[in-house]
Length: 396
Image 1 (tube, rainbow, N blue to C red):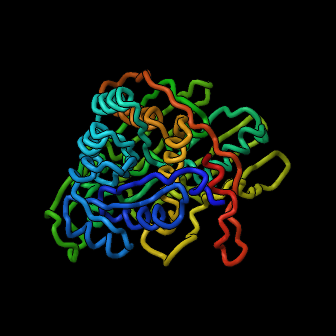
Image 2: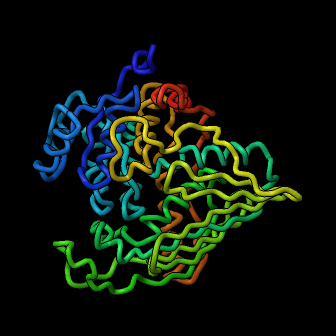
Image 3: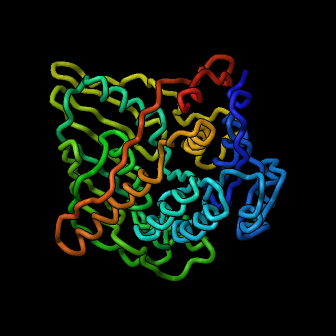
């Protein structure tokens, strides 16, 4: 008996048909037994019709029609960050559970209002990044919990890339929330919270994005020059409730390809973790008097394409696992892992760093969050990799 037979499928709609939507649509349609993807909506109906035709989704709806539908329980919001508040609010007020891409919103006040509405209506909100449920971060958490590198004392995370040049191809980066801490740094902050728990206080220094003159002349629709809003270079420090100290380094005014680093230091050894923007970040453990060892994954959502043909962002090929985990939480009547508290805490860390940059003072966080780890589970490579095995069971 499949999981979808044990638990009634959750009828789901996607709002937003941008670049990331293909991987979500394919996965939610074909990969998770708990999800019944029934509709696609977009502000541009032509865009929604094209996606529905490409993936065989029966219904194309306006955003208002999704809100008014009687059968849709769960809405996946893939719109740009600057409209998250209005979309999520509309769906909550219509009685829908919501999964939203990062960031939760662009202000703490907006997020607090959405949390209040969800609690009044007994609805759940889940917030990306769901890469923290992937094989890389969950395997790292499993080894940390085992005590193999002892008590964690400190850490260092870094991501450097040309965010300004990227904003030519991905024009949503030219809007609020497009600077590197919010677009890429959120994956590192989310992973740290999933691994270490709540942050107590933060402090930081920062610099704005550079003015960017158009370089990719074949890209239509861009202005001649622009500046990504907000802090685009950030050096910060996080103190966690458990006493762990972590240094952050995010530089979006860099050049060349993306360079990342994620390392935790313990009393018995050290751990390197691959890019938390992906599901398959390698976990490498170094112990005294031993060569560094690449550890085997103990969890299954490793980003490898399991269904259909390769497509853009397929290297991130388990996008949607957070939606499926939310759907199981709805059916089981329990708290979801990528909870509103998780989304709010991730956002408060980044906004708190901005506040520290502005005031020159330490920012004390008022929120806290905990991401309950998944049980181990895997996807089998038998029979051409199409055996489902027990990875989805780990979400329950």
